[in-house]
Amino acid sequence: MSEVEVKKTQESLQDRLAQVVELLQRQRVVEDLTHRQEGPHHDRVENLVHRQNLVELQRKLDDLHSADVAYILEALPVYDRLTVWQLVKADRDGDILLEVSDSVRETLIADMDDHELLAAAKDMDADELADLASELPRDVVHELMETLDGQQRERVRSALSYDEDQVGALMDFEMVTIREDVSLEVVLRYLRRLKELPGHTDKLFVVDYDGVLKGVLPIKRLLVNDPEKQVSEVMASDPVSFHPDEDAYEAAQAFERYDLISAPVVDKNGKLIGRLTIDEMVDLIREESENEVLNMAGLREEEDIFASVWKSLRNRWAWLAVNLITAFIASRVIGLFEGSIEKLVALAALMPIVAGIGGNSGNQTITMIVRAMALDQVSTGNTSRLMRKELAVGLINGLVWGGVIGVVAYLLYGSWSLGVVMTAAMTLNLLLAALMGVLIPMTLARLGRDPAMGASVMITAMTDSGGFFIFLGLATIFLL
Image (cartoon, rainbow, N blue to C red; front, side, top):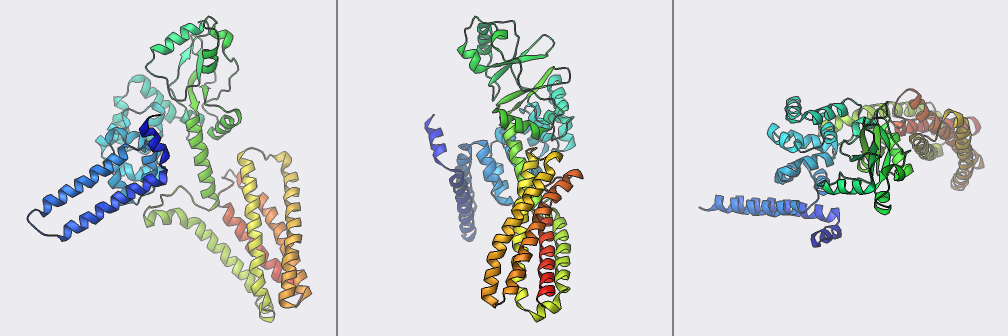
């Protein structure tokens, strides 16, 4: 590892971000000071200072990896982001555009003209172009396709023909293929003639003369076996492979399960058409995890943290409207028992506890169920068993923690009957939370929706309304 690489590893991303922010702040301070000064050489001094700061900032950016620059761009307000983006060298634009999040990429592309977009995309591989094509202007995509050779154009069209959640949309076309009837020595000589191997090459793909996949030759087997051996003697003839129309997230789970670095993609006739690599799978898993968190909070899409107010409103308003309706319903439930609350003021102090604990328990259940569904651990055959298990957990938690808060209620208000009602209400609301925590994501899945979509909002609404109704209803019956 070189001295520069050692220095880079010693600095955290936060340190690098702080350095860029400091340079941007220094530039603004110097510009402000020079604006206040007057003199015959004012413009020349201002221009010189401005250029010196930009040169220093550009030097810092040149030392950073493209992924680190992408991280910094995502962490800056839009004005500073565009200032930094203008300082990035043109030959790095494409790499950085592929690294940043979709929402930030939108702002960067909007700041580029057609010539810059074409220059950024010209050196991309077919799968990378397919990732970016949907966000580029149509005329740029058309002009870009015209610059590609026939093979590249066909590969881009192939990748674009699949949905973004299918294997075909993520497969890479850069790979090394060999024949099974040659020796390992021949393979080694062939590899030495290549300028470089495609990234994440841990195996070579063995095909026949028609391109049909026969097996894979792991690099480690190639290196440790006798060079005189044939490829057919050493290769693995039953590799994990995927079809282009398979679900990409299931493929990512297979990568995790079998510790894969790359895997072949074959068509229905067994012909090798591409490969999947670990970097794409890691990105997919990260995106799925982020989307799941956003969906549970009722957010429709990834949001640039520095996006405009209007964009943020459009992303958030829908489930807030739903939440407003459910909150109104909960308030009407309380309104049904206004007379009871007037007679026993302690009810107003205790009822948020029942609702809050129920919402927390329901969110725990939903999180576990959504995770199990994402990992394909939940099926129709084990739904009833899962339901019984969650109800049992809710029952025990309700009796234990309901008993604790019941004792506290007795000590505070000197009423053992209020403590019993508190225990009963807590237990019943936790049972409701367990029931809804299983039913909500499963119902959404049956309707073809994302089981995490708005689940947190819905479970909170159910446990709030249910908790208020159960507690105030029991108190009205047994206390008043």
